[in-house]
Image (cartoon, rainbow, N blue to C red; front, side):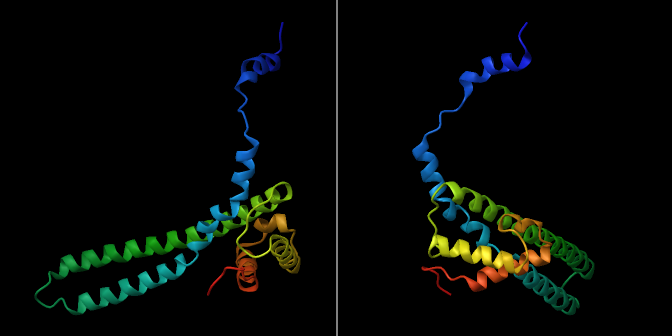
Length: 174
């Protein structure tokens, strides 16, 4: 009688994916390009704050203009709905920001680990210099570079702000 493990090996043995080494190496080399989108949308909280200000000022303006030519009941109902929607947007933006920071942490950790085994094309100056800077900054924060995601959210934000302000890429422009 065969063991279940042996049966599973027989069934799935031929199912192992064929790995093209060249494709893997080229894919990992492009890792830095993939992560650009994670850092591009870091100003979502600013957008949310601007949206709140716009909605509040629009609310005040429209209510001041509702003498006779606007239906005051409809305007009040619409403004209440607007306020609710804007508050939901702000709440979601905060969640998005937190998740975005978490994604950045995870992305950095994946890159740090992959970089131990593969060459990653980086657009942020010399790869070794950046890694040294990243490690040094992590040490200043008292954390292992591979465990940045274990920092409290406020410390993670401080950490990545320190990285952003302290590291300038070769091709970076302000």
